[in-house]
Length: 405
Image (tube, rainbow, N blue to C red):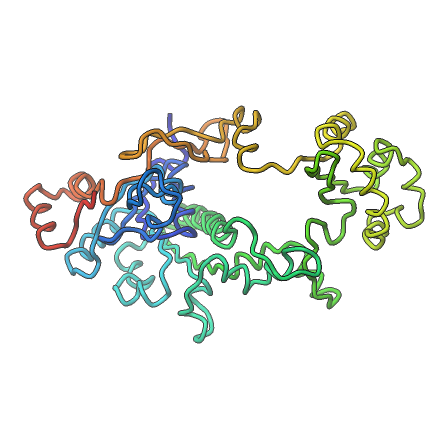
């Protein structure tokens, strides 16, 4: 089966999460991704959980992000390794990296360098505060939690009146990776029209700030400084989880006045929409505490499955709050094939999340396991650059490359 990005080659100098997310999606869609690591390996190889013992090739974290990629080891402290990298860039379409801004420039692989090596290259750089930033910010290291905190996301996350909280998954990295992927695809389209590559400058802070939904508008329009609201919504009510008779929670996402009329009817309180306090969404939000004082005891009269059945019949938006066991064993996830089994070298059969990109002709898919450290170094140097076995052996002896595994 053909794939959407077949014929696109990516030099992947990424590590940990934000940039590997980019190259994961590109690989899922068929791009040839050459994941280049230093001799000690990507930092993510040290992150658990581990499928087996604590080994660089057993990290579930690394494996899930680097499926479908080819793995090379280049020691970029060595001049000959830099020459190999230049040769690969000359025959590639995209370069992705997530070092601090000066790192690639010092190595001789900044944007000004790369566009001379290959004028058609699309070069994506990811860092905390961007390539073009205030001098005192440019070299700051950043991880997901830094991005969540600095962008303001943590200030609106957590229980009402409580301390700021980190969102449960690494959205600072993942959002940046998704937006960088969009930028790369747009830059490739531009290159197809003009013949010119360009630099995609992605800052984690920008990416999270741009996706804080209505919190920015609430401040810029009204001067209000939003705070955390727990599981509620700042302008829609009821839109939260309610504890039920069996001790679990059910989400009721009643986003419109018409839905509230139907919701009130099925919970046995058809009078609520006529109450002056609850007639509209803004009024319900203003009087959320009073409304929940009525709803909380009602929701405790039935179990979550019972409420699910009631809401399903009425066509109301609802959900149980699943834990990982429940969602991984859910029939919907099974039907959508959102968990796939891979045969991971040295690990064996392993189950990871599938690509969520479904298309009628060229969907994203997991078609190869993650590489062992340096697994494809020899193969790539021979197939793409025409290196002989003797040359490769000499480069290994000099510490320029290694197969790691």
